[in-house]
Every structure is written in C-alpha cells, then in structure tokens.
Image 1 (cartoon, rainbow, N blue to C red):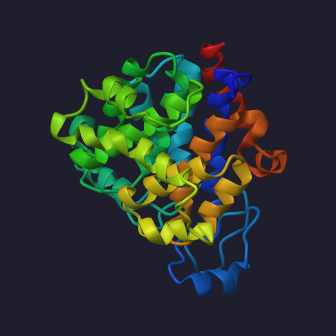
Image 2 (cartoon, helix red, strand yellow):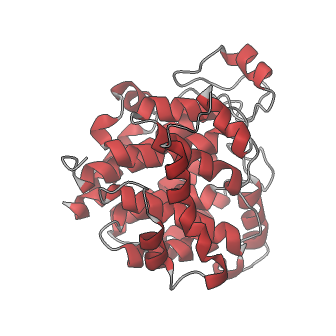
Length: 327
C-alpha cells in the first residue's frame, strides 16, 4: 500500500464515490432481488440506465444521482476556493435548490433529506437550522470531498465535516456515524487500513461529538475485523446487504460498505458486490466506492468505470485540484 501516494488515494476516494453512485443509479431500490435479477440479469457489471417508470427515469447510464450532483457542488467549491468555504457552498446549494420543486421528481430523484432542506430554506430557515432528522447517507457521501481535501489535517477535517453534515442532517447519531465514515475515508487516504482504527478516529472526532456517541467510531474497525476473519463466511457475498439491511438508513448501509471494502482487495469486486446486493445499492455502492478507491488509489480503479462517468472531465479536474494539496 505504501507506494500509492496520498494524492492518488484522495483522487481514488472521490472518483470511486461517483462511480459507485452512478453504477447504482439504474438498478436502484429493488428490494425484491428476484425482480432486480429479472430486470438486470444475474450480475450487474457496468453502468445501466433506469427502466422506464422506475426511480431516476430519464437519467442515462453513467449519470450521477442528485446526491452526486450536490457532492459535485462541494467538489467545485473546494477546487475553486482552495478550502472549505461554507458560505460559498451553501450559496451554490441554494441555487441548485431553486431548480427543484420540493417533490421527489422535481429534478433527479430528490430524497427525503433534501426535500426537508428545500422546505426549510423556502420557508426562510437559516442554513444553521435547516437540517432535518433524516437518517440517510447524503452527508456521509458528500463528506468524501472534505476527506480528500483535509486528509493531512484530520482534526480540522472533523470540524469542517461536522459543520457540513449539520447543514442537512441534524439527528445526533446519524451525524456522528456520518463523521465516522468521513474520518474512515481520511484514514485510508493516509495509507492505513481500518484495522484497529477506533482509537485514531475517536481522537480526531472527540471535540465534535458528544461522549455518549463516541462508540460509533469503533464500528469501522470492528467490521473490518469481521470481514477479514476467515472463519466468518458470507456466501454469496452480496448477501451482506441483507444482513445489515437493504433500506436507506445510514446505519444499514455504512457497515456493509466497511465490510465490502475490507473483504475485497480490488475495487471492481467490492463495488459491484455492493450494487448487486439490491435495496439502496446506490448509496451502499457510493460509500464502498469511496473506501475502496482510497485503498487502491485512482490507478487501481478500472479505466472503463472512469470513462463511463458522464461527468468524468469535471470530476477528474476538480479532484486533481483539491488532492494536489497532499503532494
């Protein structure tokens, strides 16, 4: 692992997140796995468009979701400003919200967290109070951008990430678990694994999280231990999604992402296993893609996945800019 630079790992985390998001967009939210197989075959292995009348209808193969679009706003802000400028990011996000109508289908599918934020902002609620009680993963996903920018300063990352999380997610446990994920990505960018990661994650986060929630930072290391224990078998491995839960709660998805990125050394197997697990596979795959991309670096991601991203040029250019601080 030591021959992969932090810059390469940071770019891998960013690009890997978008790849996972786009791979999951077409076959998103099939909770009946037989229905998923009937629609997309026995094994999804590349970008696929959504079926007519299904979620994200109108998007093309290789498009990112609305969560991806919001993450791209943060990525662009970091690239242009050189640092986390919350006023700049929220101004961009306000402009994006103006293109939506507050319903699920006002743009690319609008999840509950963003609908709550849309309602709050249109009602004049300041950004400091706009976050709702959704238990979804959007804040964790976009926090990958911050992990890439601030991997050299984990405590500074924790402060910026928690502020950004609270823009959309105010529930304390969800916020803490989102932060744990973001710091786990940071640890991987720094060239470590998730093994025995609890102490360092706790240390980085201790000023940002109530002590009653601090055990959430043990989860990445504990799941890593289970995933690498040869006496613990999950076969077929995509069933890990059912073990942790197919639904949208971050608490269901993020441990599956830790397991998959720890269980499989290669990016393709980890991310495609996340996609083929069904349910909210889009979020699970984006979380897995960030972790696995940080482990293998941008050079370890199959080129076909990068080439198939419809926004690849913007993503790659901005990822290069923000990861350059790690040179």
